[in-house]
Length: 558
Image (cartoon, rainbow, N blue to C red; front, side, top):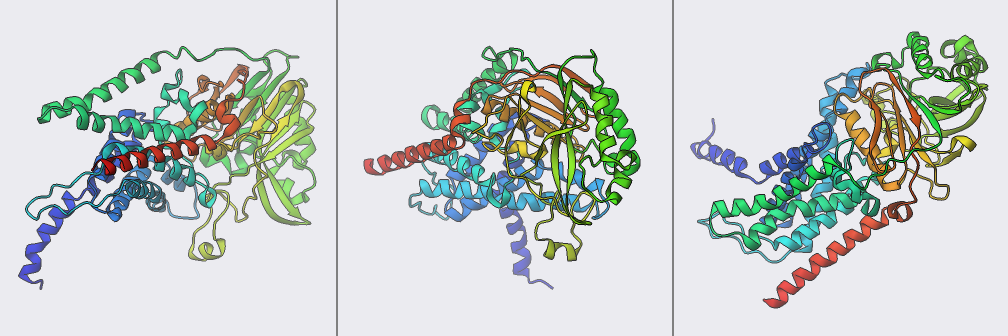
């Protein structure tokens, strides 16, 4: 039986936990994720960062700042990445309920990056803060403007770090909330100059405006403070609304290479079923036939849509089950007859890595075929998905029952990285398969700049939230690089994105369809295309120096 003293203190502990700033930080993180697709409630992202800044300004010590950032990140990534749980419902190797646990575990790790940003920002502006008197809970505040500059700088650096550490998980940088509707770019029109990570720093600065206005201009009283806080938010709202209605700087030029982009609507439960391969091919074929015979065009098929192994040199048992008529040459020739003699096809495919009769691994590839069924070029995916295309620490995880989410036990091997396929009169094509498109600054071979980027994908794993988030990130790559992006997916959202990040045409989710037209032209290389992530990192350095200078000046005046 518990002691009376313990019973008396339990309500106090619960009350203290509820009053802890960690709970508002958790809620602020979840609110900030609502600015991402499909909700696109960007004011909530600003509000979430504004709340985090206020809590951080009142933190007493560095470890509290770290905890605030971690709780913010936990709410932020758990909600924003909820689509990962859906992937567990399409496989039989692990229980579906593990999907929810996987989302929380991933958020637990990813939350370390906002925690590191908050800790570092606080250390940059740290000064000795006395403890409040025992009769009050008033917390002395850190200098707010230097803190806002510091957080913008450290957020840029930690997002960049998140994009490559342990192979990277660059999904949903904070600044993606500034991207406008399909017809506009919003404040993301600055990304050709500052990149996606620079946009995240800009969003942190915008979120600091209410706090700055309140501290500089607010009259006494709650009403006056609220008015000063709402004024910059209203101004930002008016600007964002204006940018969403019209984008006067976007260019609507037409290119010279015809395309046909196909979305067959092959549902995820049928993708890996060999009994459905022929039906899936018929869907692709019907949507790919030339509308006008004799026209030269590029045809784009998605990742995972083609079930056949189309390369020569594999043992007969490989073709017997998975290739049309058991012959890769016949399979290729059939594809050639579908697209026509004047067309070129870029399709997602799986290539095997063989040693004799033994299958060592596979490669997630894009293969280029001509109208005669000959293979012209190929590309292998470099950024592979952990637990999707390979099992990290296989020797430790496999014995305890964990496996890949896709069928088979063999891992995929990575390709060499971004490259350009020169297809002559059909243009120079860059290729980024599925998840690769989210890596800012790593989607183009700078020595051989392409005319467009092909991004085949299978988004059928990812529920209602994953596909629109994936499309938004493809739009950011188009903006950063000044290149059009063509996305062909199995179930949607397939789209043609011009070099301004504007969606010219699209096929919605769970709809079979095709898009036809001319590939939009590329722009001249943007500043980001030339310098890459050196720009946002330099911006982070400048913001850090400004913050340190303001703190030093403040200390000298005292």
